[in-house]
Image 1: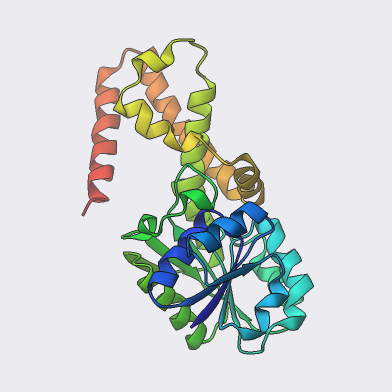
Image 2: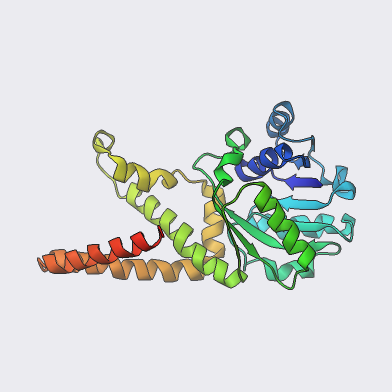
Length: 275
């Protein structure tokens, strides 16, 4: 199978590394000359270019490793050149802000969106590693898609060794991602930015280190993800604030029993996730 990946960043590069090892022909598109050179020199791709038209007529699957606002622009510019049987997908962390607009710009091919729930705090192809996908969640958000498209995307996920596979609506995806991904990043960023002590680094333990790792964030990508999913994210922030206030009130009122109840509740909920 021949796959073209547009955007050879951390995720796009990791897809390329994993798929080429599984026997796929993987072609890459990136505007950065150093990225293209690194991908070719390290055999992450079969061939690479800065022009999508170099490969579009000779591929089976197109994977867009672009920011949300870049996806529609890419399709508007290039979908006129797509083969009719081309399957197009993206690895974007939000869905509803653009997936319902795709048919307005897509001229050829079938579009099906998915989201690999994996990543790391580093950015760029030099940190690409297909091992980040092993055992991770693989979310697919079809909209009136064919069985062929769904099966093909699922096969890519299996070949990359994702652990769990879920099919859901774009709305459910964005609501859940607002909680499990975006809120956690918002908490980490806020925690780090609330620090005004010059010697904090001398007192860091595993709790702080684990919680704040994701505060080392790609500001261009995540500001776009936050803004495009802000209705769901704001709702989750409000629910988090309400829970934090319960803990705050318990401290203000010297209510140790309430604190214990909150701790017991969180322990039980977190333990259930391990089953």
